[in-house]
Length: 489
Image 1 (cartoon, one colour):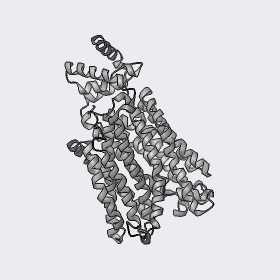
Image 2 (tube, rainbow, N blue to C red):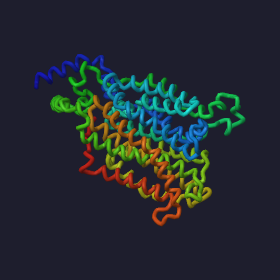
Image 3 (cartoon, helix red, strand yellow):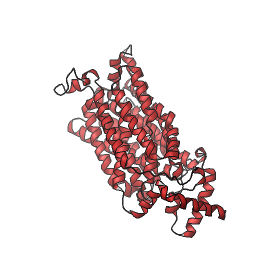
Image 4 (cartoon, one colour):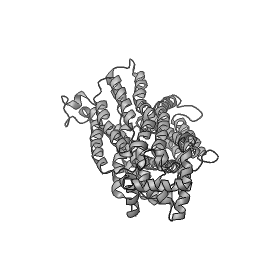
């Protein structure tokens, strides 16, 4: 054993100068403050992953209608569900592959490929001329959209332990804002010839392709994100030819403050190397992923239902909002979410811990969602004020919940497995989220037919169902199901 430890240290000394992960470790030791520059680049790239996920929701109904594939108007939602779910299906099929690539060849190449795929396939989706082209472009976009899992692993490695909650909060905040602003972009800029005839001519490309403009805006942003990737340093340790033959130097350097402590940690990490090949047997990781999937299903269902509920007529329990009204609510809640996550979440997480933040967020969300059907009884300025406050609080709780799970997930594995671990979580989450739009739409349609029911009439049933899923997720955050992982650096 002593010979093995000596050999391990010799190999680390030999490869240290050429290893980008070791350079990042030394940089973190030399710079004790918050790496604002790197976090800003992470925010930019992470936002790119989320914008195109839900940007099509406001206009996909009209896109399918214009393709003339549905024989009846009632069938439009059926085809729209396939287009909406194809992205998640593609991501579910390939996330694990990209996670393995990130662990073997580095985080940065995977981030570059994923960002470039947004530029290509999202642009082609906006130029789709038929249903099958739109379906395939969304599917390929999901197949190459490997950014979320890799960015989460990258964010946990790019800063010191005391700032890890802030780094993962940056990822979840940009993701949450993207899922909010994405539909706003789709709602404001789809069919620009009809909405802004003084700016866009019928004979222009935006007249021939009425859903190209929102896709183009997101693709142009992706080009900017691709440029920002130039300043992202690699964080993966590459000072051994075989990953299973080396220890995680990042974990060693930050767990150890003296020679004896370092030796103990090396022994511990060497023992872990024997068992680390099978992530599926890592119960702290798998239990966290399962909880994450349940909350993701609820989140996607809420995103689908909120837009449908807001634009539905008041006689059906909705808000009678226009698409522009919904866009304004989403934008305002996005800015409120940004301020909370960057300024308030890190100190709250340090005081309470990620698991307690997740539980509290889930608990508070349940009575909040129960109030939504009664908000529809308001009108005028009061309605707009209350729904904006409720949306800000709901989105803040949702992202705080997910951020806590991000931290638990990354603490459950060493650095060398974070790419694969996050890929497993994205694969499982994508499967659950693929059912979100279809399930949420079907639930909403069914609720519209029972306005005079004696038990939970109308939209009360919709938000009750969302709360049931939320409550199940909350129960799963307790022992014996959820095993809180060992605190890693």
